Image (cartoon, rainbow, N blue to C red; front, top):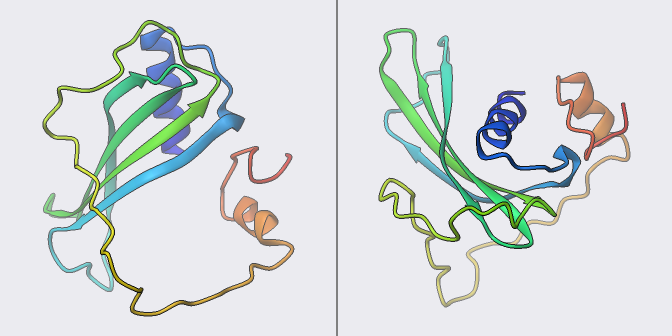
Length: 140
């Protein structure tokens, strides 16, 4: 999983001690630059945008550019992953990086629709079969 590898690299670079089983996916930004083709070979290139010390944990801001086989940017993701208990490593609390996407304020109205879905009891096992190795989702 690319996110695990990039977080591990950031932990090493910033001398952060933490546990990958305590990572929570927080904010997520998606920008579709071009229509996603129905058939293509896509390559995603993740990078650490910034790492923040929030005291109670470390916040990893990761940017991921996804390109087609012609090296044309198709979409961009930016996510904030919070590692509980990995804070107080001496890092900065806020970021001066202007490439970090701001949160979008939720509209002050009722939602357009509400959909309730129940996941199956074996959903975590299905994730594992698809290559998800995050121990937070299922014990190995």
